[in-house]
Image (cartoon, rainbow, N blue to C red):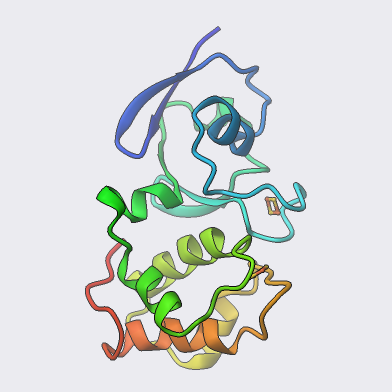
Length: 159
Ligand code: FES
Ligand code: FES
């Protein structure tokens, strides 16, 4: 049975079983490897994508549940290889080390900043509570988010 999906604005068809995690379908069937599968338990946030405009942990979403819904992955954030404002800010603030957490962080924070354009540092930290980084101390990540929010970094964030 083929499952119809809308991924990054394109119609796609998956031949995976309906209970296959969306993260695995994205990575293994469609080679969208930006979302990482680290814990596979909904704990780390590395697999975060947007489902119908809201962040979701794709390791916990059976692909059958994504049928007919709008899926956006980290690849949607840099069309034509132009980094999004938040991605540029991460780079400017040297906020990325190994990079495993980075796609999920960007998807979570982009959504948060679209809804909270002038957040406090504490609000940014709270928004990151579902995204684990094992390399950094988080401060540079928060700095990057704040720079975008306050317009001192790359501008124009939208969701
Ligand atoms: S791999 Fe999905 S939350 Fe960690
Ligand atoms: S940069 Fe390595 S887990 Fe965040």
